[in-house]
Length: 374
Image 1 (tube, rainbow, N blue to C red):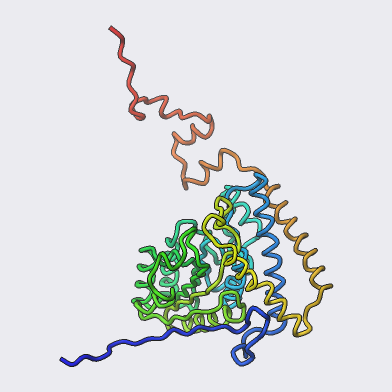
Image 2: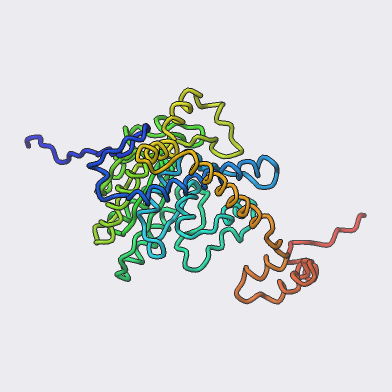
């Protein structure tokens, strides 16, 4: 049998707004208006302010471990802006705060989550977001399940799910990708490739030249974009959501970005990252390039920047107050929100704050009377 090529593929890279604020007018056509960009820039600045304050809350002992979103705001905002609020679903990891706020999640819920208050995960009715997911990659399976339900109901809705480059080394990722592809679910897989899986660099955890090419194994449309470019993030996601909404199945987008902070406040990235690398990525900061673009269009100036920063500080101050001043949960909540109908022995525990059932029946706890000494 003669040899022949049975499969060939290429992956497109897209950048529309570069780090100097220069815009590719042709690619940007029919994407974001000036008003859209101003709104997104203001949202990024406010989210960055909250991110910085959250870091300080942890350092001052007022909050638990926190993963900063610093440097990755454009990926979340650009993609979130392409989804339909109140119709589409967002299934996040833990660095997509900007998209979550955009889709209606109260800002103080994120702080409550990291303060250890489960009310931060009680998503308000009408907000199509699942709680943030800490286990690596497991939530993508839920995203595909939600999308499959939408398809079975013949609803023109889409699910966006976010994850890091490290998640693509997990089995759950591949199961989700395969299921989505086979059943053609309306799922958009958004990989925020921030170059590091905690302290493991991308090149040490995979041998593929890109993360995007992993989608080729599942026959899925895929691309790689500049993840610090709000125009590219929006355009790639809009194309993917439009395709999914029209019955075209899932897509994969690799958004190349960088976490400017540590993995979490429990990490010290100075132990494994070269400062020169960090400094180089600071020059690509999505907030800086977006402001440069706005200034070049005469849409922004120092006076507006000062007013925005003051407004952001006021908003964040109110958000922190809402999180810290919330009524403390009572011990009854542990019982009342665990069962639809509380069993009698747990009612006694709740009311007496004692493990009455164990005390009444030592056999239940495997207890035995102490043998008498001879």
